[in-house]
Image (cartoon, rainbow, N blue to C red; front, top):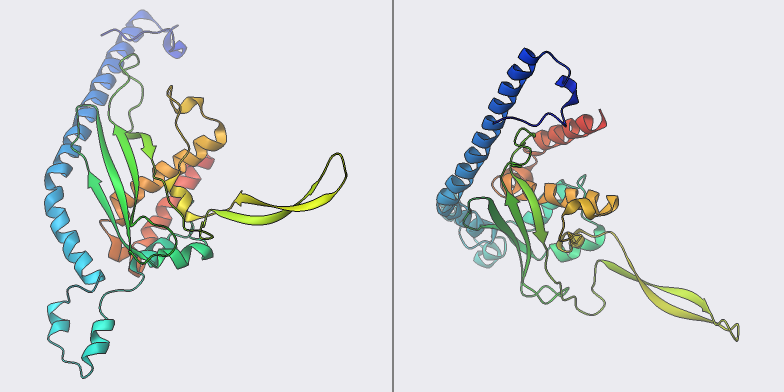
Length: 292
């Protein structure tokens, strides 16, 4: 394969022998990227194959968090007050604590959000079977049925990931699978419980009579629940979005992958804080690289 040189002016004026050698290197680079794509494709398939075994372990974790199962050590400990022992089962606010520990992140927990997130019972990741070019997963946020804020018991966020090289520029850098689509869900808020909006009174003057009256308007405010309504990606791709929406979408992608790959598999370490030091170091490294 001969790599087109029109876009590589750096070596277009080199001696013919050097140009041939660079062309050979670019061919090897393209071959390396194609192999990386195949590696990640096989890796996604391997993860999907092992996922049922991972889920068995995570189900045992859920049982303890929800108080449906107790460790053998605690079950052998007798208590005088059986009713109190039943009340004290489980780990209250487990997922709320984890999300609050990630407070420095783009989707930080606001004080208004906490009351609602106390009803968050579990966060699960559902993997779909990978195809030749893409794979996808869905994050499910399970809430208690007695949650007074909205009617849904499960809020979802879906992501589509592609792993392929650009055939028109096969030597272009391939950094691994990339999320190219995400979709949130509708939240049916109960009256006066919408945590993403705030009502305020606004003065409005009649243009004819000059009379001033107060009207009530709604304005968007910071909330964790904006995570479920990401910016819409145009049909022709992310490049058509404005800069602000692209930044929001990039933060959304990063947070979704963080939940899938780090937080959900190692939830207890984020609850205790043991995983936060490594997480903060990664954030600092990412910030320093982006500023260079």
